[in-house]
Amino acid sequence: MNAAPEVIVRLFTPADLLPCTEVEQAVYGSGAYSTYFFRQLHDLFPRLLWVAEDQRTGKIVGHLCAAIGQGGQTGWILNTAVLAHYRRQGVGRRLMEQGMAELRAAGVQRALVTSEPENEAALRLYERFGFRPVRLEPDYYGDGCDRLILECVLNETQSLADEGGK
Image (cartoon, rainbow, N blue to C red; front, side, top):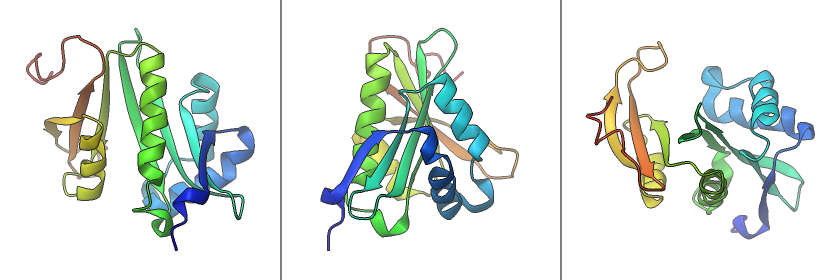
């Protein structure tokens, strides 16, 4: 059964704090963001935090977190998370569509995202939105794991790749 048609993407509200944290823990385990992160991100960027809600159950099944760097030129997709049962049904794609649309609407010139280099599903998703690998960052989170930095040019500007990966 395909659950995606019954999943809506909507703006996060403070009532989503605990459900988002539960999704985050289910997807990322010990590397999960906390309720504090979600609350502060909502306070800073209320249009850049989106949730996927199963209309049948009212359950939050995924989220996307984005932010805009100082100066407003660079946006980040900080995090996408979708519960395993809802993957491969377009939920992540729909969250990305909304997040990228909001970054564009905010006038962001380029968007960045990180991924585990071996996370093929995430890399395929990001590549569908125009992200291209820029560099591999060793020990990105200080946990011994490398992360691939990907970039999507939203509006004409100099990219990280043009800057020599700085």
